[in-house]
Image (cartoon, rainbow, N blue to C red; front, side):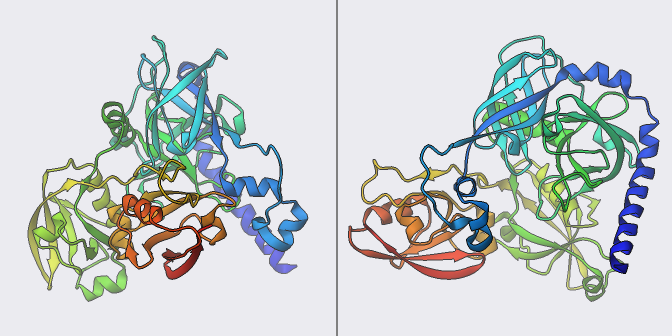
Length: 460
């Protein structure tokens, strides 16, 4: 019981701190600003195809879930194959271009926006970038209200900010707070130096704008950090300069082109700093250099510590990644490197990064040979380097009741071989499957959660 009351006391302290942090922001009168910018913010409604997991969750009664989980298959006729979702977006041009999040419109079969005057307009997804979570929409028409963008570099920690969006579908909801931090990298993120705020964001706010006091957009609201699924005082927005750069590339090319150096990095901690005789933890430690990459050609080695990028100090890995993400391909960069207790300058010419959002390949009945019921894609160069493999394909979806499902293949598996034949890409996979004979059993080598295994796949 004592622990319970202590826990309550901790929660109370957290809420008290959160209230104190937002007190200054709440004293700012944003009413005129909300009235001015709201017409340029829209609600986004999407229709998406349901995943196999979601279909199973609908079909399995709760009593069976408790004992058997979601893998129980119960036949059900005319189960819904689509679901609806919602989010927010805002106009960045008078001719109908809007910014939102990739995860809002991902796999959407239909996208509709609703304006402040309750008009609904069908929207087209011009392009979407998973890595930065930015998507560009387009609607037909002209003279739409256009929002001004601000200078993120001038944004200061502690500055009041305002968000407008559609949390839980409640459109045109405004919430205010302060900038808690800048250049924040989430766990596993390598592309976005997030703006952290304590603005209350919830599902449906995604894709909406974050404003400064001048009514300029400084960020695109993207995600929260939460243990409950709801707002807990930590919200993250994509800097508007990053989002606009992505939007411009999507508008011109339909995809985003990034620079590629070919190294894997980690932060320097206190112990490593001492081992490298650094006065404090700083720099980005090179843990792996990809063969034949720009870094390999420039002479980088595992164990190098990168201290400066074009003369700018590197405090941590995220600093270097942010610089690289803003570097155009074929540009020469200068890096100061610590090696064997001596600093040296290394020049490298970055190249165009391999496409990190390859198109999904779906095996169809028109292809020769058996249909095993999977959707696949090629692995990116970064994914191959991380797994230390050459080639391989990722299973993205498994059709329920198909040959692959019966063989216990699941989404997320990486197929490296079929009958001892190496699978380098989707073309190799399709050819190998096409050669399988009815009644045979194929040996499928996979990597699942970093563990290697071999499955037997009976072709029936």
